[in-house]
Image (cartoon, rainbow, N blue to C red; front, side, top):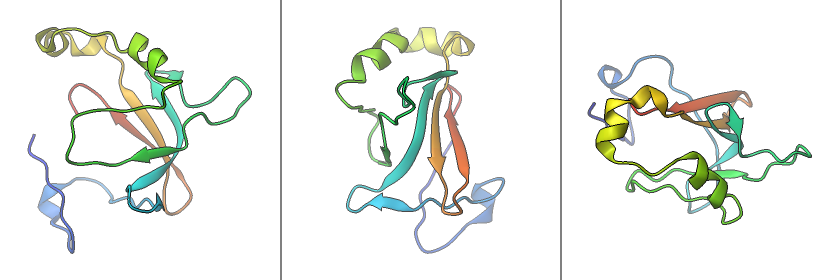
Amino acid sequence: QPSAILWGGVDKSLYQGPIRMFPVVQAHYWALELLDFRIGNHSLGISSSGRRKVKRLIVDSGTTYFTAPSALYPTIAKRLQATECAEVEKNAERYAPLVFVLKSASGKKFELEVTQET
């Protein structure tokens, strides 16, 4: 599906549903407050003691890469097994979505789910 980023206005023909606003919490990085990060239903952003391991999500429209704190990277790599793109496309339902739980400008939780179809 085609996509776009617009500054200075809204084109209602390009989206469905409400527009949600998120405050930038770290200048120069377009960082949003991340409450949790999950692969499927497995939380990687909250420790067993309830503390957040990851506190920011940096929005970057110019990259196809994901980064993570070095202590968390091995766990993410284990859950996101490397495979051929054709295999993922053929069996997309076998791959768990990435879920970013964010805090909106109104203070509400918002779950951004990224699937193979997104």
